[in-house]
Amino acid sequence: MMRLSAAFALVLMLAAPGAAAGQSPTLESVRERGVLLCGVNPGQTGMAVRNETGAWDGMGVDLCRAFAAATLGEPNAVEFVPVTARTRFPALQSGEIDILVRTTTWTYNRDTAFGVDFIATYFMETERILVTAESGLETFADLDGQPICVIAGSITENIVRNRQDAAGVTIEPVPVADVAGYTEAYREGRCVGVADGAAGLTALRTGLDDPGAHRFITEELAISPLSIAVRHGDDAWEDIVRWTFFALLEAERLGVTQINAQRMARESRHPIVRRIFNAEGGSGEALGLEPDWALRAVQGVGHYGEIYDRAFGPNGALPIERGKNRIWSEGGMLFTAPFE
Image 1 (cartoon, rainbow, N blue to C red):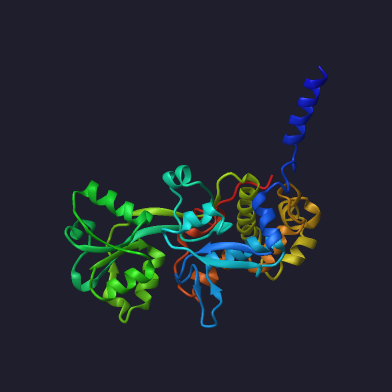
Image 2: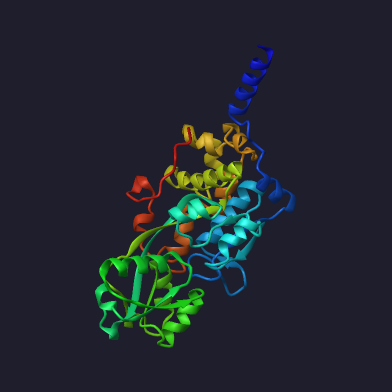
C-alpha cells in the first residue's frame, strides 16, 4: 500500500501545473550559450534579408528576436543561421540551430518523418506561378511542355508535380537551389515561369526591371501554412516557442503594443492581459521562464501586427495585403489557443 501511495503521489506531482518547468534541454543549452540559434531564409525580402548595414530584417528575423527576448531577456541575443531548403531540417535535427523560422510549410510527411515538430502557422502563404506576360500563358493548362523554375526539395516542387499529374499536363521542371537560383534563371530566360509562394514571387517581380511585364497565372495552386519548427522530443521547449508566438498574436488582439506594453501590463484590468503580461500573472512559471517573459517579447519586437507591418505593410519592405494573415478576430486565419 505504501508503494502504491508513493507512486500515486509521484503521478500527481508530475501532472501538477509547472511540474515540467525548467526541464527543457534546449532552453538549458540556450541559456548556457547566452544566444539563441535561429535558422532563417538565406535572403527573402520581407522574411529574412540583410540590410545595407549587414543587419538582418524581416518577419522571420523579428520572430527569432521575440523568442530570444522571452527566453534570454534580450531580443538581440540571437544568432541568425541561414539555411536552405535542403539544409534546414538537418540543421535542426543536429542541433546546429535551436529553432527554424524559415519559410517552411507544415506538411504531414515533414511532421511525422523528419524528426521535427511544427508549432504554429505564422504566415498563410499561397502557392503561385509567375510568368512573363509576353509568354501568353494564363492558366495551369497552358504550362504543358513549358520550363518552370522550382526550388529543389521544396514543398512547391511536390505541389507542382501533384497538380500536373492531376491536370494531365507535363511541365519541364528547372530545379534550382534557392531564391537566388530561380531569380538568375528567370532573368536569363532558362525558365518561362517560376513556382513558389506568392510572397517570394512578389519580391522577385518587384526586383525585376519591368515588374509590369510579369504576372501570375490565374490559379492558386495551394495554401501553404508557413510554420515555426523545433526538434522533436523536447516538449517543454515546444511549449515555450508555441506560447511565445501565441502571446504575440494575443497582444495584437488585446491592443498591447511595443510602446504601451509596460503600461498595459501594469495598469490593465483585463484578466488575460494580466495573466500573460503582468509579472504577477504567473504565466512564466509553467514554461520555466521569467515572470515577464511575454512582456519582454512584445517590448522587443511589438505584437504580430506590428511585425507584419514592418515586413509587408504599406510602408514595409514588401507591401502585401494582409488578407488571410489577419488574426481570427479580424476575419483572418491566424489564431491562438486560449490562455486559460
